[in-house]
Image 1 (cartoon, rainbow, N blue to C red):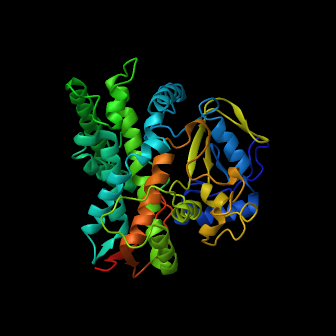
Image 2: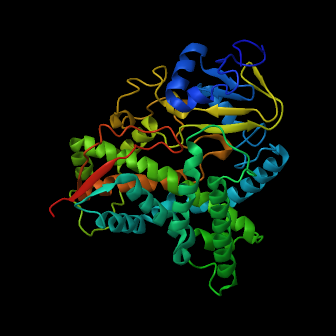
Length: 431
């Protein structure tokens, strides 16, 4: 798109005559965004139907108007841009969100503290004393945790489904150009096979649980949804839990990998966290008191390395974006990563400093977006914060973390933001 070619559209880079900005963007995504942010400002066009936003107030405005003027990301391979169908699905999801919200609140999350720590101890115990791939470790932990939280005694096999879902979506994150669903590419076939397998497996668990005598008394989210009145259809129960599973796996796993990296780089911080939790850990229960330093570490990692570093909203109708006009189907890409590192909102924005969170509000609320905002704010934000805070404290209690490549394992801006190829050794303290 030519800069200034349409006065109703933000300016932006012209790009290649055929491929547009795709080659330059895919070669260095965050570098491309930084350069164009510097040249065009907080709002710029990527192509005729896509706009990037790096302004916190405009970002909040778009998020606040989600469901009314904007939709969340359309389904993969949706080349028809069926906005009406997506709006219907969004309305159904909002109803399900209101039903399941109490089961994901802070008080509900704390009831799972003991099991969260048990799972973490088991997963880290399996690799203690030897070098491992950190992202694989953290994904194992979060997959087991969220699977049990959602499906309790019926969670066997679900962590493997979550791993498969990540594997089949990874090939799509490396390029902005996607072939239509009907093109018989191997990655397309794998994606649809995995999608069908996940749907069939989860749907089967829901139906069997409902048919059982004690289906609504297992103490997990599935039991909660099966016990609501009026009765929620099985397919709605399944799709609600599937969304929670996907969000509760990849996002916290990526964040915890970044936390491990910081603990490996900062032994003094790890010692302070250990002291906050009462010294090296044995078999005692997780602390019931607040862990302000551990929580501050989590918040600071989510500021510097937000796993959801890019959020998409699609215009539902003809609408506005500040002074600019949008058409139905236009995409708006919101960038928490650059907002979180903007010196206009954050002192020393590129510095890792958990202390900024210990004295009150660290920045204007609109400039901190690790879980989004508005009516589609992350449903599991309280659960994720609790799990990450506990995990940060427990890792510091139990281990000295050493990494041969922590300094070099910078994040890769593909999919969820996490350190690339980070390896570490978890040495038991006193072991």
